[in-house]
Image 1: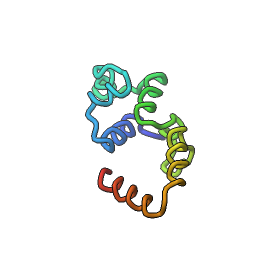
Image 2: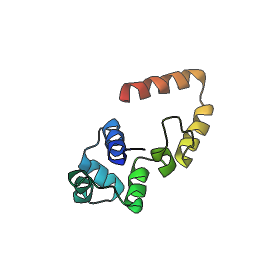
Image 3: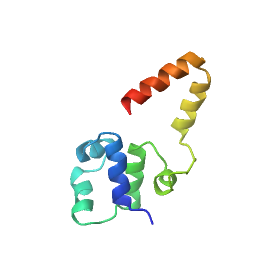
Image 4: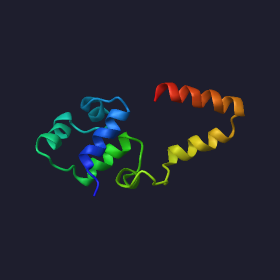
Length: 101
């Protein structure tokens, strides 16, 4: 079974977001997010959906194992644009992404 709070934390940290930044991106009050951890509570489905939207992922992606391959519309758009790049542009973009992540 997935540990929802742990997964939220992992996704937040991967983006270098504080709880406050997650609240801003998700539209949820920071106090709500903090209370999940203090009280060891799970977010409601509507709150989890907002969290997933902030992370630019579907709820299925969030809840699935690491091998899940369903893509969001934005990810599909990115891949379509990737295909239009030259090999040199792809290398340069990949190198840039690696310096950020």
